[in-house]
Image (cartoon, rainbow, N blue to C red):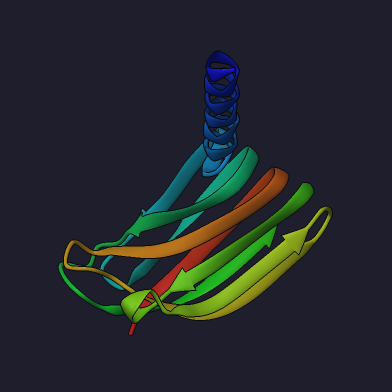
Length: 139
C-alpha cells in the first residue's frame, strides 16, 4: 500500500509540474525594427505566433527618466493580442486589444527608466500574424 501512495504522489507532482510549465509566454517568428532619435521614434514588431503574457521593453534615446506620449497601432490575424502601456510604478496607461481580423489604435503615455527603456505588457491568446507599431515623442 505504501508503494502505491508513493506512485500516486509522484504522478500528482509530475502533473502539477507539467501544468506549471504551460504558463508564461511563447513567441515564434518575430522581428523588430525601428528608429529612435532625440525627440522620439518608433518600433514595429511582427510576430508569427504568440501565447501567454510578457513584459517587454522599448529602448529610446533618453539618457534617463522621461515621460513619452505614445501611439499604438495593432493588427491581429488570428486569436487575440493585447498591449498595455506602462507608466510610473507600472501603472497601465493604455490598453489596446484586437481579435482575429481586427486593427486597433490607441494613444497613451509611458515612462522611461534610468537607462532610457520604456515598458509595456503583452498578452496573447493563440495569436498569429500579429503586427504592432509604437510611435512615441518625448514630452
